[in-house]
Image (cartoon, rainbow, N blue to C red; front, side):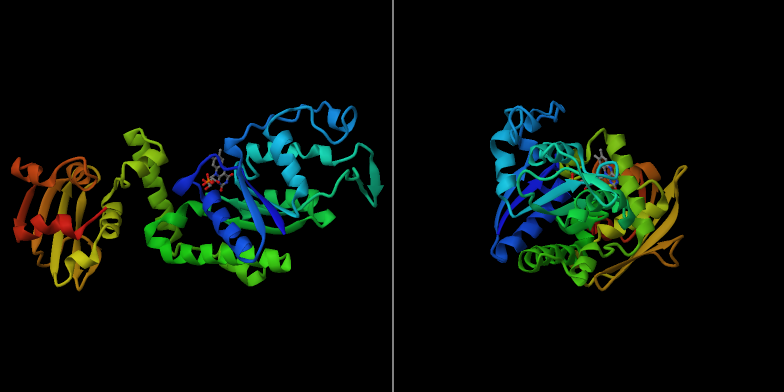
Length: 357
Ligand SMILES: Cc1cc2nc3c(=O)[nH]c(=O)nc-3n(C[C@H](O)[C@H](O)[C@H](O)COP(=O)(O)O)c2cc1C
C-alpha cells in the first residue's frame, strides 16, 4: 500500500503535536508493510487555487500553477492508495495550509454536474485516494472536532473515502513530564491505529478510545497551570517556544499555585531519608502561610502554618517567586537579609537539591 502523509503544521519538533502524533501513526503503517512518504507543507510552495477553471477546460486535469503541488505533490497524491491529512485544529477546522492543499486537488474532478438522490456532485477524472484525517487540538473536549468531522463526513464520507478520523484533544499536554505514562498509551495506540489502517482499513473502537482517553486527572489544576504558563510568557515577553528553550517555569501567582508548583518540582530521589517540615510565611498582597511535609521521598503541601516546622522562611511573596523561578539567587538574598530563615538552616542550603525545575 502506498501512502502519502501530508502534515500541515507550521511547527516542528517537540512543539508540534501534529508531527508527533503523525510520526506514531506512520510508524505503525510502516510496521504493517505500507510504503509511506511524509511531506511537510511548511517546506513547500503551494499557491491558492485562483478559480480559473483552466484545469477543467484548457488543460484538463492540469493546474495552471507551476509550484510544488503541480510538480510534485499532486502526482504523488494521485498515485497513493491512501492519504493522511494531518492538521492542527485551527478555528475548529483544518488549518489554511491544509485547506489550500485540498483545494488544489480540484483537477481530479470533471466539470460536469450529476445528481444522485438529493445531492449534486462532479464525477472524478481519476481515482480519488482514500483518506485518514488526523488532527490535534488545544482544548480538552472531543466536541472541538465536531465541525472538522462533519466536514469530512459530508464531503468525502458519503463517497466512502474516509477510512478513519483520529482526533486528539488537549494535545499540548502530551509532552508534560508528569503525564508521560498516559501520553505513552496515547502514542502506542496511535501506532496501533497505523497498523490497523493498513491491515483492516479501519481503526477499532478500543484503539480509538485509547487515543482519545483523558490524560489529566485534575482538569481544573491543569487549566490553572496552562494559564500560569501564558501569564509567565506575557510577563517575560517570550513565546511558548522561547519559554521551552529558556527552561522557564510558570511563575506562581498565589500561595495555592506556589504550593502546587513547588510540589511539582520536588525530586524524591534527592530527598530520600529526609524527614522535615518547611514552613513559608509569605508577605504581600498574594501572601499567606503554607508548609511542606517531606518524608520517605514524598512531599505534601498544606495550607497554613505547621505545628513544629523544622525550618521557617519569612519572605516577601514576590522575592520567593523570583528565587524559585531562577530570577534571584536564594543564597545572595539570604546574605542580604532580604528574607529570614529560622530553625534547621542546613535544610535551607539543601533546598536546591530537593527541588528541581
Ligand atoms: C491560529 C490557531 C487557532 C487555533 N484554534 C484552535 C481551536 O479552534 N480549538 C482548539 O482546541 N485549539 C486551537 N488551537 C490550538 C492548536 O490546535 C494546538 O496548539 C495544536 O497542538 C497545534 O498543533 P501543532 O502542535 O502541530 O502546532 C489553535 C491554535 C492556533 C495557533
